Length: 426
Image (cartoon, rainbow, N blue to C red; front, side, top):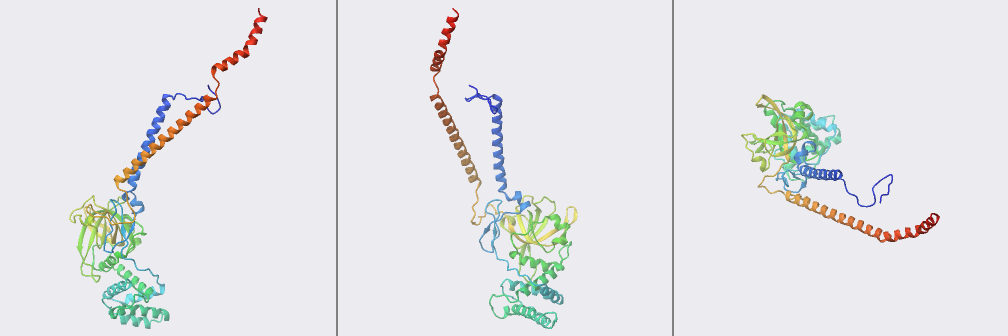
């Protein structure tokens, strides 16, 4: 029976599916399976930080641990950053304090500036100052005789300078006196040391004042929140990034352990890493770090590899270093800081973290269980639909009159008329 309508001309009963429509349905099913496979592949690739680290930086997880431990990974390609020693609380100093600090620094010889940098850095980090600067009395006299310094500012500067000397005499409480003035003084000294760095040249003796200062503060540098910069901006716009904190990503091509020269920060050695940038530029980056994980230290220092580990370094852009490349004299940016991301070696145990990672075997088990659950659910729905259709068909058949009774009724209705017609036409 066919009940035509403006929406569908099909009948109410099961119809035969044409061969062409069945093929289209099969092709649609194949496309859905291919799409699901692509989604699974993309999910696997998204679990690798190297795919998107160039654009968004590494995804890091916080984990507790000792400050001496290096950042390592929970699984191949994932990052872990130690809390490490906390960075000292940043205090904003006034322009007047900075102006006075610049005046004081200009009067100090280079040797005294280095001693003051070490003393202020140790004092701000709550450490004992091992050597008193010889120019303390001269600075105190300058503070008291300068007419531009008001009474409140003079007292704060006297407390700051006196606290440096007091750390050597007796162990005082950890309370900072003249904290803003100390930060202003240290910032002026750092600026003076950075101005002595010669950009675009080989290593010079004047570079190492700022070099070892950056290496000493590497452990206090933040591990996140610093903008990532490529090698080309560092080479083409050095005036914008010099002495600024930057984040660089790259593959370690060469790792060299270098014995440090004599320095006031008691640094014995450091690692010089040649990185191939992750953004694809064929220009190296030199990263100077105080220590490196096992997977980096295993790289040969005499040869260059193209399959080194991917790492992330946060540090200060010190200068553009001149070096001899295959094409002749060239420049490479130097970043002094610390490693904030590095995969662990095969024989290295990952650190315990609060977040659990899913291994490859567990991933495929989850995918298999999900597919099995989907097949079972689809089978249940198909069975339920078929059962409902059969039940509806039985209900329609139960209330339908039998064909014989229906035909008998037609005969009874038409028999008198047939008899009358015979009488009229004998």
